[in-house]
Image (cartoon, rainbow, N blue to C red; front, side, top):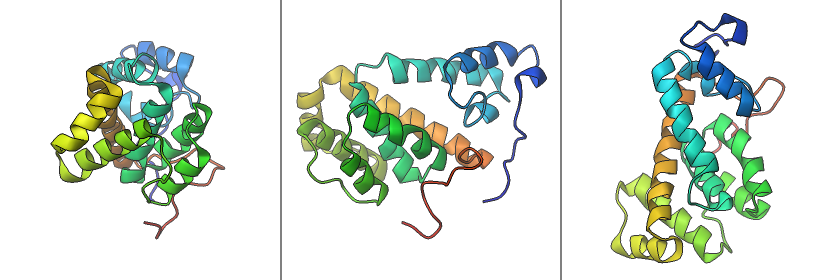
Length: 188
């Protein structure tokens, strides 16, 4: 991978349009204004709106945290998003997702032994991402197990984290210095 395409911003280098968002990010982010925030701060209005959307989708969504983090990992795996996987795999396990399921997903396999709700999330998102549609049977199973609001929120989580993956890829952002990227070159 080539170097980052945007030099890393620091709080003291933010202008008056960027600073309010930078201050909000610093209150919640373990990586400060790095990761997706570094390029997002280049467009402060977009960055603020994305930050607000992420705040809902991370902490106020109708999805249980375990399923929300699983959805983010599914997107991270589909996109081979080093930063998303690095950040969210530990959060998914902490939220109760089985480490075995995380490992199988990381190796690009459909996880085995998923509870019904997790299988519904995996199948729903995999169909939506790969086929750009969801079959009636898959939709009905997800709706029955999750409910209408959770199906909508699940779709929004996936779409938003695809956007985050795209921003990270465009900017050549990677995991923090001193850490190994989760996906090695040549791995599927």
